[in-house]
Image (cartoon, rainbow, N blue to C red; front, top):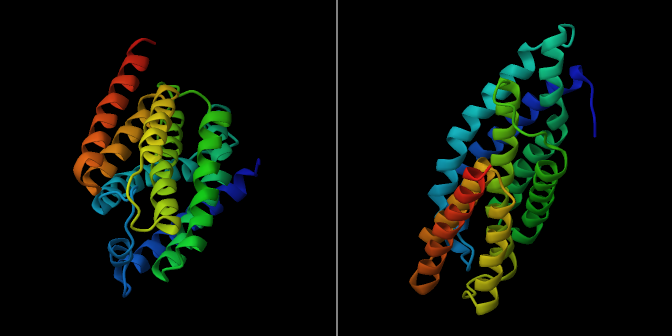
Length: 240
């Protein structure tokens, strides 16, 4: 899914602006995105403010990444290598922004099954990129660091979006059955074991967001999963 430098330089910021505009619509419209959330709860519904708390700093990192994309020149040899790392992710980044922006329109219309289609596309695309295409982080390269952080945090919050939207679209007001509890533990355990510290940190954050959005024994179990995920991520990355 390669694209030219010139295309990347307009595609990435354009889709960022479109997604940002859609988010503002979601916040200030009536009903707003929080109203829809509160009217549609399920066993994978997170505490909604954890999502907004995640996206604010993540968007600042995106802006720094976009600045690198705009500033670097393919005509300068050492900058071209840096730019290659950024440009490789741009198609997936743009797809993600378009999916999230479109999701917002369906979400605020309470068309949750339609909204879920765009969540699935985005989450799968971001996870594919992180596990199949993303180069390991080079801590001596600002572009590598920013690309890794943007891509991995997009994938990390994508996991939470996938669970949240799927559960409310198809299992509204449903309790956490034993199957749900086992699948949640196994799924997050596997992702945590396969993650670096950035994506792994997102897995822990997702579980904390889920725990604070639930109640009773399910909340307690999700909190225990969060501690377990933190242990897995920490052990794996300290052992490197």
